[in-house]
Image 1: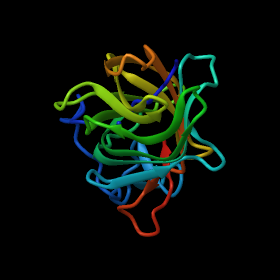
Image 2 (image 1 turned 30 degrees about the vertical axis):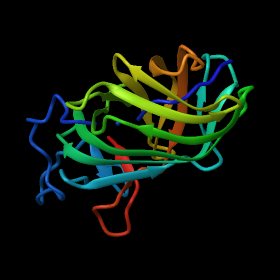
Image 3 (image 1 turned 45 degrees about the horizontal axis):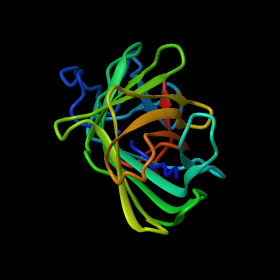
Length: 226
């Protein structure tokens, strides 16, 4: 029997926390453009301390499959991530964030023997986040002081409720997208770290979030990576 929960998602104090944050607006005549701006490319700087939020991209789901090529596992119709900006240096560079929330809802399973999904939760927030404005706009999540990136699924099955816990031993990687103002993660691999013997050994997480909005600014404009 294969049951596949999830993992994850974004952030303790990141390694670059000592980088000076760019102020919310540049001084007149200052041509420096920060890594993250709101409203437009090269627009208003996203300030350290601003809260960012993003739902799943329209018409997409978060999936937690048993293998990288499988379509068997858990699918969630809703998910929401939230983060706080820690540093936003001048481009080219790397902005840092703290992923403070990652939630999942409206989850179903097509695994034989699983009747419903009670919950999917991320257990060890916050996670560290770096956003690099280099080629591909890479986004990296790392575990923090609370432990490695970890998620727990509670599933109702023919044998009663079972709990499956999964961890990511290394970095959790994805990419940003200025067209959709989003973040995408594809087949991020998690390994079982505890729970029922009915839980599968592995789980692969994919999801696209966006638009990412700077809720610390009026009208919550979309965020760009410069």
